[in-house]
Amino acid sequence: MTWRAAVLLLVGVPTLAFWPDPVRGVAVMTGAVLLLTAVDWALAAPLHTITVDREGDRAVRLGRSATVTLRLTNTSGRTLRAQVRDGWVPSAGARPDVPPGRVSRVGPGGVLVLPNRLTPTRRGDRPAVTVTVRSLGPLGLALRQRAGRPATPGWTLRVLPRFDSRRHLPEKLSRLRVIDGTQVARGRGQGTEFDTLREYVVGDDVRSIDWRASARRADVLVRTWRPERDRRLVCVLDTGRTSAVRVRDEPRLDTAIDAALLLTALASRAGDRVDLLAADAQIRTTVTGGSQPALLHRLVNALAPLHPALVETDFDLIVAEILRRHRRRSLVVLLTALEAGALAEGLLPVLPRLAARHRVIVAAAHDPVLTALTTTPPVRTGDAYAAAAGWRALAERDRVRAALGRYGVTVVDAPADRLAPALADTYLRLKALGQL
Image 1 (tube, helix red, strand yellow):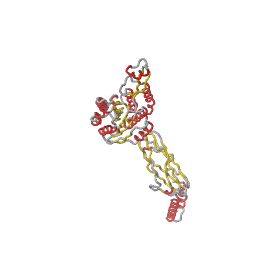
Image 2 (spheres, one colour):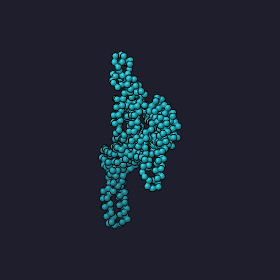
Image 3 (cartoon, helix red, strand yellow):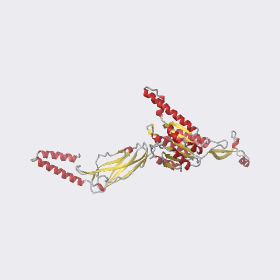
Image 4 (cartoon, rainbow, N blue to C red):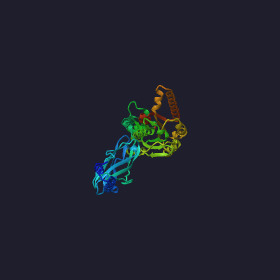
């Protein structure tokens, strides 16, 4: 109730109390109130004269805040007294600077600026839903509100992956520079390429001597080698049902995305070509390699709207797609779960075809709940059953790991917060050994 409506009641109630004919007094007062309400409604600024637009951030990383500003322009000749609600989906975490119930005044031709701070709680595209505007009359007795008026401008905030493992990148790049600068293969070796010629020094392997160049220079020259560049790395994200399991309060898929981003940033700095494939029962997204700065940006935007699908992963489809796209020998990194049922029935039957042509790494986030079940002494009978289930799950993981190892697959099984650096370390170790 506005102060004008309160004044009207304070004047009307005593008047009715002293009116000679109470029935007629009520009728007169009711008519007066209805008349004032109609006048108040007529004096309210019409909704069709209000234009709405937005400006602000289009993308934000998960865990950070963005600001999207709503601008209302009053094109009528009347003063706009408005209550405005800017609606977003709940996961956008909208916190308007101006409460929706506050009445804002905008003069003719004026602009009302309403900042809205968004702190999303989920990855993906967070759209604006609708803008609701109430145009109040001068007395506050009546208002104008109509669905679809004014028209709601479309706006979508893309919430990018968190990429917490970025803090490990300087240390991994430092190790990469050591590999590039100091690794000199004493011989041709697998996975190396020729770098330069230099004079022989005591301790060099005589097998690296270039006898033809030495004869031309009348000096003993040796060949130096460096790790091969322009290798191909294929990151495969399993977006099936196992990726929906929550590990440390986030889906396993988010942990896999974080690891893929760190590996991509590292491999692209090393001069390798990185492609990405995300699939479950169908191909969800693909990103082909490009220049280093553009690749990471495209990868982050492609992975932002990716969510787990509650279906079984079709590993036959994934392997066929990899073999079709990549005929040259590549390093294939499959980010999935070491679940006996899914891998034994889906991946192991088709793994020989993949391992015969490519080097394969299977990376999985270790669930800390299993470790806790097997290390905590049971107190109740139910705890003993839970511990037995945990030991059985760990034994199945060991069997899956051993089965993958028989095909020459490298398995990276680490806790969720250590998966990204552990996978990067495995990549650097293979690169240092020339086994990519």
